[in-house]
Amino acid sequence: MKPTELRIGNYVFGITDTYVDREDKIDVNVFKVALLAEDVVKLDIGFGALEGYEEKPIISRRLHELKPIPLTEEWLLKFENVSINIHGEVIVYNENSNGFEIVIFEFKHGNLYYTAGEGAKLSPPIEFLHQFQNYVYLLSGGNELKLKK
Image (cartoon, rainbow, N blue to C red; front, side):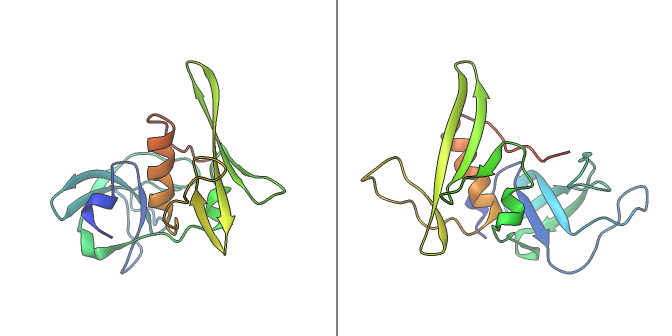
């Protein structure tokens, strides 16, 4: 991963081991980026981070110590505002001041892509969760994906 690919709110894997939070509860090896500074990343971790996320910024790591989370159907379905329709399109629903906005991603050739509409050029393949999060954030005017509770 390049530092320019990450932003606050992205989910990443730690590489080496399982970490322990301030209450000594072992957590999964999934972290939420809380702060970026050059090649140092501050990570939030809380027990049950994927189910009931609680912010506990306690871990600082070098960027090279982290790895991206591969984007899978299982990960896509962890978010409350994401669904996959019968055509294999990934649909992200965002509520804004004008009502609901829909962003559609397509699976082609085994990869996920964003396209601005029929005949438009496909985005580069979206292989990792943080890339998908960044697309959704940009295309929806700053809305974040929300984990299901």
